Image (cartoon, rainbow, N blue to C red):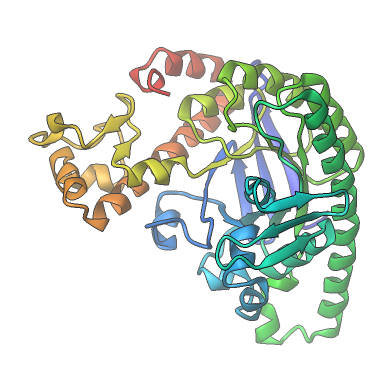
Length: 397
């Protein structure tokens, strides 16, 4: 795809990689953590603040946006970029994980999945083709195939069935996506180049479709899924089905073997993972992109990442602590507010507490991946990881 290119710039002896993914809304330097804006907003954080902290990509979720306000309304606004005031790259998850987590109200067949909305109980039927149509209307730069995410633990026979179904849906998503992209090209050819409304309509811009590797914790299923998806020549691949309750050591055993058979010239995206130590070790395993709600969710609970480890600011020991949240952090929160003040906000349930802690936690992970990239480019990533593992920050994760 001429609008989406991935350039691998540096590799490390640990298999860590640094690269650049080009999109119609700008370049993405990897490895990178991507803030999650499930409902077209990163909770409590304005897009201007995201830019200030160096966020390069924001995620949104197809399931939640399809249920409310609906893809047609977002398309009328000119796509997600204009709707949420974000002019950098956007990635939309297919919503498959959310749908399949509704175990009591959904039914899966080879054709697709029937489910009930968590908002009004209305019934919906998603095929891979319908999911592609919805994501096309949302207008993100990178979109994900509809897949089936098996739970953990699960019998291997069940995981195999879900993996094979996801592979079949990957083929159907790719075919439907290709047809939608062709329709876009035809509409662009018919539009006048000087049409200002057309120029701002992001739903007409090209999109890159990523496949998703599944297979649970079964290495043979993971590698088979990765190999078959590689044959389909997606411009990038997600790695789904982790962080659903499996032990970290089990995840890393299958993750390393999975990335080993994934195309070296395509970006690799580990979905739903935002634990700092997990990021450091997954980068060593050759992963390029990450996302997770963890930094903002823990912030709303009064918890902050720090160079000292995770801090629960509800703890009474912070009541008279007038030091910065993290003396080594350069974010706005750490430069301007004390631990005592942040605890005061939390105890009094002030909304500013969640905002300031969310900004800090996101900055912390963005800064961590920036430092990881610098170490890879310098050829010192193994030392970087060794120093991380020996630091207080690694102990709590």
